[in-house]
Length: 151
Image (cartoon, rainbow, N blue to C red; front, top):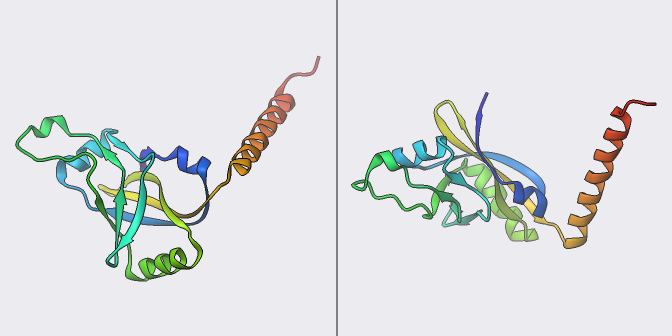
């Protein structure tokens, strides 16, 4: 069972996910330890494809204090995302044609490695966000009404 390290809840609100992919992420030793102790933030991050490679931009990975000052750590640097060549070609073709974007959905550990779930997504407009929130509130109130004991 993978352990959830970071979740991009903002992306779930702002985007409609069309297709999801599991990808690796290239980290140094201290960065991996920092991610596993909860130092990873994905809010505001996105993935771009540049030169046939995928890069995670805008994610913040806190410094791992026990590593000391001798190990250089840049919390906001771009990090390479590892995808299969066919997945990269499929994604870049869809992005070029339809104006979709790649957003990181969550990060988790799997078999000692840090994995990233990324989604091919379409941005929601403001009225779509309000509509989704309204539906969620109605569903919650209905659940509560059904669970409430009758007098």
